[in-house]
Image 1 (cartoon, helix red, strand yellow):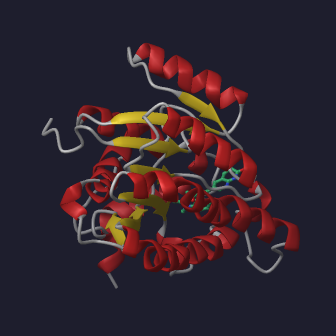
Image 2 (cartoon, helix red, strand yellow):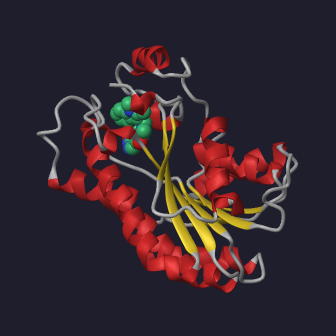
Length: 259
Ligand code: IMJ
């Protein structure tokens, strides 16, 4: 541990289980000396994250929040910041959702409802969280917001469909938020992770074949783990990235550069 996050107070959205990228980010933050608070979707997630914390002998606050509801976001951020003396240095947004049946086959059948759901849960939540966190980040002299994205935002990846369109909107939102919040020394960036086996990838048809193909093509000749992604997120949250905003950082073993 290099203590690069000592004294930093970070709120993490999107932890569900021990495979969650959000959980790996939180663990990396703890390793580097940060204080972490968790915002989780529902009571099931609250129970699961609470038992993960207990197992890790880690005492960290958990707040409940369905991030598609502005009022819930507002009060969750307020409650979490309250644990940290009304200061926040960073926020991780690791939230995405689309209808399972729209993450297979053609994109053409995407429904208006499914399109709206994917954008509301995977894109709008970042905007809402940034708005609510803004005063607490500004109060500590600035801060860093990091979200998770995927190559499907810019290339057609089989089955990714409406999530790809939502991730494109997410990456554009990162740039617009970065432009607005930059004058307050609040940075906004995304990490584009290579494919990883998490709950969000379970049941996706052909995923194992895809992982194998990605490992063969990537310059590093391997797929990435959640820990690799977590360290990229940590960099963007840290002062080492003080000059970086509006950016997408690829943690994918170099896969995206290959033609
Ligand atoms: C997800 C679907 C299709 C292809 C996919 C993925 N590939 C990868 C993912 C190639 C890497 C995982 N990923 C990057 C995601 O953003 C996943 C989002 C997601 C997953 C589910 C599954 C369960 C469900 N809804 C979901 N919504 C979003 O019901």
